[in-house]
Image: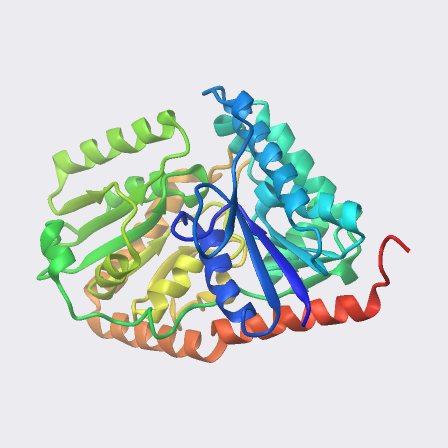
Amino acid sequence: MTRVALVSREYPPEVYGGAGVHVEYLSRELEKLVDLSVHCFGQPRETATAHGSWEALSGSAPHLAALRTMSTDLAIAAAVEGADLVHSHTWYANFAGHLAKLLYGIPHVMTTHSLEPLRPWKAEQLGGGYQLSSFCERTAIESADAIIAVSRGMRDDILRAYPAVDAKRVTVIPNGIDLDEYRRSNERDVLERHGIDDSRPYAVFVGRITRQKGVVHLLEAAAELDEGLGLVLCAGEPDTPEIAAEVRANVETLRRSRSAVVWIEEMLPRPAVIQILSHARVFVCPSVYEPFGIVNLEAMACGIPVVASAVGGIPEIVLHEQTGLLVPLELGSDSPPAPRHRAQFARGLADAVNRLARDAQLSRKLGAAGRARVEAHYAWSAVGRSTAELYQRLLDDTPNLRA
């Protein structure tokens, strides 16, 4: 059986983003198909081999975070000796995959969940470390034996951002969803605990507080939402103190003019998120950059329609007027990226949310269609099979790289 080393920064119980969710569920499927070992960052755990960074790099300077990542990659590269193939996820682990390819003459597969050239706001978080994260990604992606894009939009972005990449090396395999775990819940204890009133319709946002996810634009749109509509923000893990302060100020301003604004700053466990999604009238995804947007699948699986910005891979998932409503978004030339017409984008979000808030029948119709769509197209079992088949094709076609 093929020995595969799956390499990721995130792995349960330390999962905070879509890439971590992808690795968690993909690994469950791959365990049935290959001899899998998982290598991740962080504290020891039973289900994976965890690796730490060099103690000499401790400190709070932003660039040290990138250096710590690279030191962890060195440890992982040493540990995966004996694998037939290495598969890395995100820039945090891509360098480890690249080094393993060089060290052991094995194919390197990398899944792109986002691209550093399209996330210039990361410089705000990493300082000079952004140059290192960009270096790690560019080095790996230009020499990887196969690149998995999670959407057609992501594939197009890869080829634009990295013209040295041969298009034949890029394969589209989407994210998936656990259809048994993500389904409508009738429980209400989480709502009661957080003061969410589901006797009135509410819109919900779930995501990290980052420029990418566009929560500041949703808060601008909230000023134009119908007064009877509640707003629930499941938003934590801010990238920087600056954006955390900006969001806090916006929420406080919003609360002075309207009621039923609930901000849950902790990253909730999945059953709690599922319950909050299940009772919402509409889910909102105002991202300015989103190669896929796995959270949209989660909302659709719970039978909730989605209002989302029409960027990246989102239009491949959320079908306009069928499973949700898409809001046009034209980005300006600023860095970090922002809507060219900010007020217009906010108004578009508000109009789409208000439309579904006012029309419960339409909301139910689009929500049911969303559930049917994820059932038909986004099962993790299919994602796992497609990934394992890619491994086998690569191993069949690629002689030992040291030969």
